[in-house]
Image (tube, rainbow, N blue to C red):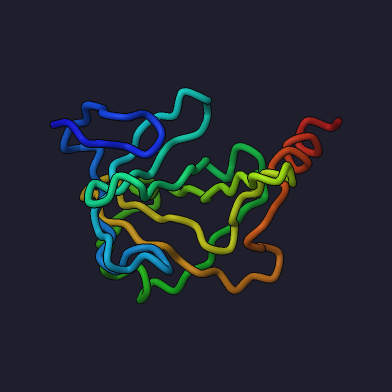
Length: 147
């Protein structure tokens, strides 16, 4: 199938790339279906709405730059995802790329949690004070590399 995207025009996807977010993203609750599309800039991915071409989020695996990242979510909140095993879970942090030249940030407080077995997903809100909505991606990557 083909969909129109915000960043890459028309792209071909397969059904397996589509995730269902029953409650949508915060602020975009009416949109429930998104496709995971590899971005040309690795290791980023696009989380592209299949319902509205102008709605897409850039995302990254948070463990790539924060090995200490921990997600402590009540099992009851994860119930709708029907997660059978921790190995079934994919986690992505949404990225903000400001137009004013300020730092690119990752939202570690509101990760996207996906059950890779059934493609159900949700945006969680973490209460751990270590995780904010704006973590400087470049600075934290430099710290990880010891720069």
